[in-house]
Length: 66
Image (cartoon, rainbow, N blue to C red; front, side):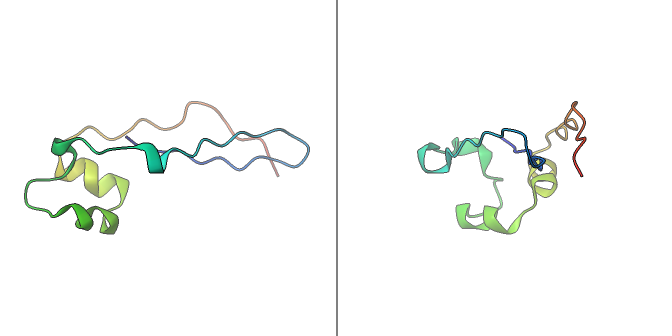
């Protein structure tokens, strides 16, 4: 799982999805050498690397705000 954040320009409509309280981590989402609470100290890139995952691709859209 990952996330992307975009700044929504004034005068446009944005939508947010808040799902954190409803997610249960898969057992193998926690690196073997780490306790679950250690996840909060990792960046997304560090977590991907610890699990041997390919990095997420950049967001394909472009931001045209000011």
